[in-house]
Length: 189
Image 1: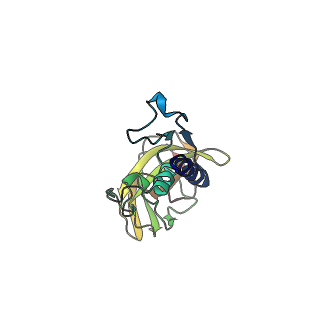
Image 2: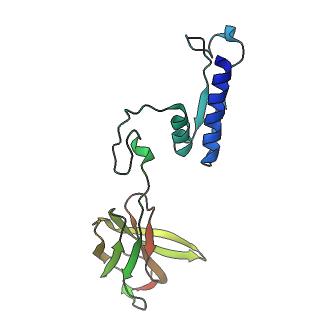
Image 3: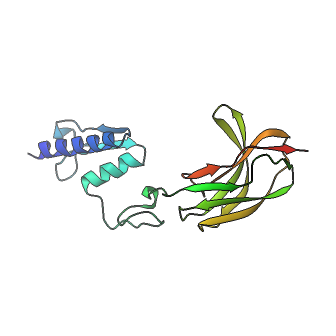
Protein backbone atom coordinates (compact mmCIF):
# COMPACT_ATOMS: atom_id res chain seq x y z
CA UNK A 1 0.00 0.00 0.00
CA UNK A 2 2.87 2.39 0.81
CA UNK A 3 4.38 1.86 -2.65
CA UNK A 4 1.02 2.59 -4.32
CA UNK A 5 0.65 5.80 -2.31
CA UNK A 6 4.17 6.87 -3.24
CA UNK A 7 3.57 6.20 -6.93
CA UNK A 8 0.25 8.11 -6.83
CA UNK A 9 1.95 11.08 -5.17
CA UNK A 10 4.73 11.12 -7.77
CA UNK A 11 2.16 10.87 -10.56
CA UNK A 12 0.18 13.79 -9.06
CA UNK A 13 3.35 15.90 -8.98
CA UNK A 14 4.16 15.06 -12.61
CA UNK A 15 0.59 15.83 -13.75
CA UNK A 16 0.55 19.13 -11.84
CA UNK A 17 3.89 20.14 -13.34
CA UNK A 18 2.76 19.22 -16.84
CA UNK A 19 -0.49 21.14 -16.40
CA UNK A 20 1.40 24.39 -15.80
CA UNK A 21 3.65 23.80 -18.80
CA UNK A 22 6.94 23.27 -17.02
CA UNK A 23 9.46 20.50 -17.02
CA UNK A 24 9.88 18.44 -13.87
CA UNK A 25 12.23 15.48 -13.71
CA UNK A 26 11.40 12.80 -11.16
CA UNK A 27 13.90 10.10 -10.31
CA UNK A 28 12.23 7.21 -8.53
CA UNK A 29 14.10 5.05 -6.06
CA UNK A 30 14.75 1.40 -6.92
CA UNK A 31 12.09 -1.12 -5.88
CA UNK A 32 14.45 -2.97 -3.54
CA UNK A 33 14.89 -1.43 -0.09
CA UNK A 34 18.03 -3.42 0.67
CA UNK A 35 20.20 -1.05 -1.41
CA UNK A 36 19.90 1.48 1.42
CA UNK A 37 20.73 4.94 0.10
CA UNK A 38 17.44 5.70 -1.71
CA UNK A 39 15.18 4.86 1.20
CA UNK A 40 14.45 6.98 4.24
CA UNK A 41 14.81 5.71 7.80
CA UNK A 42 11.06 4.98 8.05
CA UNK A 43 11.25 2.59 5.08
CA UNK A 44 9.54 4.83 2.51
CA UNK A 45 11.22 5.52 -0.86
CA UNK A 46 12.83 8.88 -1.57
CA UNK A 47 12.29 10.71 -4.88
CA UNK A 48 14.75 13.26 -6.23
CA UNK A 49 13.35 16.12 -8.28
CA UNK A 50 14.99 18.81 -10.35
CA UNK A 51 13.82 21.55 -12.67
CA UNK A 52 12.90 25.25 -12.73
CA UNK A 53 12.02 26.68 -9.33
CA UNK A 54 8.93 28.43 -10.67
CA UNK A 55 5.48 27.16 -11.54
CA UNK A 56 6.38 23.46 -11.55
CA UNK A 57 7.81 23.72 -8.05
CA UNK A 58 4.70 25.60 -6.87
CA UNK A 59 2.44 22.96 -8.41
CA UNK A 60 4.51 20.17 -6.91
CA UNK A 61 4.58 21.66 -3.43
CA UNK A 62 0.84 22.43 -3.63
CA UNK A 63 0.11 18.84 -4.63
CA UNK A 64 2.19 17.55 -1.73
CA UNK A 65 0.82 20.05 0.83
CA UNK A 66 3.53 22.70 1.29
CA UNK A 67 4.35 24.16 4.68
CA UNK A 68 1.76 26.91 5.34
CA UNK A 69 4.22 28.73 7.59
CA UNK A 70 6.24 30.04 4.63
CA UNK A 71 6.69 33.79 4.78
CA UNK A 72 5.45 36.03 1.93
CA UNK A 73 8.01 38.82 1.80
CA UNK A 74 6.80 40.81 -1.22
CA UNK A 75 3.50 42.27 -2.33
CA UNK A 76 1.45 39.88 -4.41
CA UNK A 77 2.58 36.70 -2.67
CA UNK A 78 -0.36 35.01 -1.01
CA UNK A 79 -0.37 33.50 2.46
CA UNK A 80 1.94 30.52 2.56
CA UNK A 81 3.64 31.48 -0.73
CA UNK A 82 7.32 32.41 -0.82
CA UNK A 83 8.28 35.69 -2.51
CA UNK A 84 9.46 34.08 -5.76
CA UNK A 85 5.88 32.93 -6.41
CA UNK A 86 4.37 36.43 -6.15
CA UNK A 87 1.64 37.15 -8.67
CA UNK A 88 2.60 39.41 -11.57
CA UNK A 89 1.04 42.86 -11.58
CA UNK A 90 -2.28 43.31 -13.27
CA UNK A 91 -3.67 46.40 -14.93
CA UNK A 92 -2.52 48.50 -17.83
CA UNK A 93 0.02 51.18 -18.68
CA UNK A 94 -0.63 53.67 -21.49
CA UNK A 95 2.04 56.13 -22.66
CA UNK A 96 0.41 59.52 -23.43
CA UNK A 97 3.49 61.70 -24.20
CA UNK A 98 5.77 62.46 -26.02
CA UNK A 99 3.65 63.27 -29.01
CA UNK A 100 4.58 61.83 -32.44
CA UNK A 101 6.46 63.84 -35.04
CA UNK A 102 8.86 65.63 -32.70
CA UNK A 103 12.65 65.19 -32.90
CA UNK A 104 14.94 65.41 -29.86
CA UNK A 105 18.64 66.16 -29.41
CA UNK A 106 21.02 63.74 -27.72
CA UNK A 107 21.64 64.98 -24.16
CA UNK A 108 18.38 66.95 -24.44
CA UNK A 109 15.39 66.67 -22.09
CA UNK A 110 11.64 66.31 -22.57
CA UNK A 111 8.59 65.04 -20.68
CA UNK A 112 7.17 61.53 -20.81
CA UNK A 113 3.68 60.90 -19.39
CA UNK A 114 1.61 57.78 -18.80
CA UNK A 115 -1.52 56.33 -17.21
CA UNK A 116 -0.90 53.42 -14.84
CA UNK A 117 -3.60 51.14 -13.40
CA UNK A 118 -1.14 48.52 -12.07
CA UNK A 119 -0.40 50.25 -8.77
CA UNK A 120 3.30 49.45 -9.31
CA UNK A 121 6.29 51.76 -9.75
CA UNK A 122 7.51 52.02 -13.34
CA UNK A 123 10.84 52.20 -15.18
CA UNK A 124 11.24 54.21 -18.39
CA UNK A 125 13.67 52.78 -20.95
CA UNK A 126 15.03 54.35 -24.12
CA UNK A 127 14.90 51.71 -26.85
CA UNK A 128 15.75 51.60 -30.54
CA UNK A 129 14.03 49.58 -33.24
CA UNK A 130 16.42 47.02 -34.76
CA UNK A 131 14.12 45.37 -37.28
CA UNK A 132 10.53 44.30 -37.84
CA UNK A 133 9.06 43.61 -34.39
CA UNK A 134 12.47 43.80 -32.67
CA UNK A 135 14.09 46.40 -30.48
CA UNK A 136 17.04 46.85 -28.17
CA UNK A 137 17.37 48.58 -24.82
CA UNK A 138 19.63 51.60 -24.98
CA UNK A 139 19.40 53.12 -21.47
CA UNK A 140 17.29 53.30 -18.35
CA UNK A 141 16.27 56.98 -18.41
CA UNK A 142 13.84 57.06 -15.43
CA UNK A 143 14.21 54.40 -12.73
CA UNK A 144 11.39 53.61 -10.28
CA UNK A 145 8.93 56.39 -11.08
CA UNK A 146 5.78 56.91 -9.01
CA UNK A 147 3.10 54.20 -8.86
CA UNK A 148 0.19 56.66 -9.12
CA UNK A 149 -2.56 56.41 -11.75
CA UNK A 150 -1.09 59.33 -13.75
CA UNK A 151 2.67 59.66 -14.04
CA UNK A 152 5.04 62.13 -15.57
CA UNK A 153 8.83 62.42 -15.60
CA UNK A 154 11.58 64.44 -17.24
CA UNK A 155 13.70 62.28 -19.54
CA UNK A 156 17.26 63.34 -20.28
CA UNK A 157 18.54 61.46 -23.28
CA UNK A 158 22.01 59.95 -23.11
CA UNK A 159 24.62 60.57 -25.81
CA UNK A 160 23.49 58.14 -28.50
CA UNK A 161 24.03 57.95 -32.25
CA UNK A 162 21.50 60.02 -34.23
CA UNK A 163 18.70 58.00 -35.75
CA UNK A 164 15.00 57.98 -36.61
CA UNK A 165 13.78 54.88 -34.75
CA UNK A 166 13.98 55.55 -31.02
CA UNK A 167 11.09 55.18 -28.58
CA UNK A 168 10.40 54.97 -24.84
CA UNK A 169 9.04 51.94 -23.02
CA UNK A 170 7.25 52.52 -19.72
CA UNK A 171 6.87 49.24 -17.80
CA UNK A 172 6.48 47.93 -14.27
CA UNK A 173 9.74 48.36 -12.36
CA UNK A 174 12.05 45.39 -12.20
CA UNK A 175 10.11 42.73 -14.09
CA UNK A 176 8.62 44.78 -16.95
CA UNK A 177 5.57 42.48 -16.92
CA UNK A 178 3.15 45.25 -17.92
CA UNK A 179 4.12 48.11 -20.20
CA UNK A 180 3.50 50.33 -23.20
CA UNK A 181 5.67 52.15 -25.73
CA UNK A 182 5.66 55.68 -27.09
CA UNK A 183 5.54 56.59 -30.75
CA UNK A 184 8.93 56.47 -32.45
CA UNK A 185 10.96 59.66 -32.60
CA UNK A 186 14.26 60.78 -34.07
CA UNK A 187 17.32 61.77 -32.10
CA UNK A 188 19.47 64.39 -33.80
CA UNK A 189 22.91 65.79 -33.02
